[in-house]
Length: 271
Ligand code: NAI
Image (cartoon, rainbow, N blue to C red; front, side, top):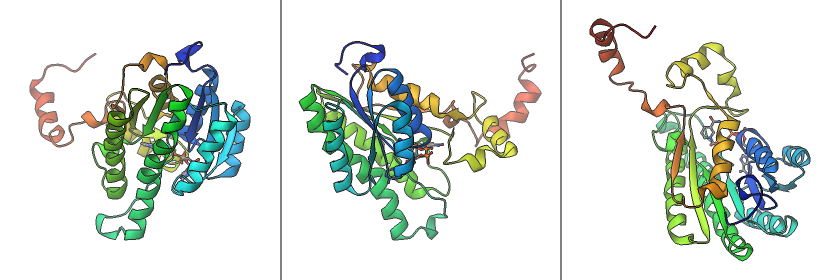
């Protein structure tokens, strides 16, 4: 961002976070407020949007990002209410879990509308506002599922891959006034997947397949999002940063073959 003053250069700048009422979005709102930004907390659930906005001294915006007209009005209201917009975090997203052949057109349309059309419409609406305010940054939240599809999440994986391509296209067309980057988290413990994370056996299984040995936190993602929004990322655009503790590196195909050979011939394990 081209703003001046404060940590990350975000002090006093208006930034909207979609899906800001819970999980990753709420953590981003908190860190932005700590960096001195004026935060617009956009969520389809009024109660959570207001709760987080009250907590961070921000502006609550109630809209469904899949309703592009409502999203555009909310962003226009944020521009007026926050004294100009210099950033947008397209974080709201939804998924589902079904076998490939069980997804209906309706399921696919809904996932696409929220995760892809909502992101596109958000960028399209803020671009002129950010330009008018003097330039800024957009960060999209995709998923490691878009880089390495997950079984049972075909439309979600495809939609998140589209968000990465959309990030690159927007960065290409909207510079130099706008930088556009993307974050693709691996498993992050939030209300979205608390049922899995709270199950010790399930969580330990995930941790065992993660080189950094733990699941991610919403704060891990917020650290990166705030960095990408801020002045220290001033020369970074069109990038997708996978933030997953190394989970995509897990060599599931060869581990069962090479693991026993490594135990036999690979020398002693580390003390
Ligand atoms: P969450 O369920 O805790 O929070 C999502 C928030 O977005 C909720 O407050 C919800 O009301 C809001 N929201 C959902 N649909 C909306 C819509 N159509 N319009 C406006 N607001 C809407 O979820 P979490 O985990 O914080 O996820 C945030 C983003 O991170 C999503 O895009 C998700 O796909 C992505 N992600 C999450 C991962 C995880 O393991 N938790 C992993 C990879 C990506």
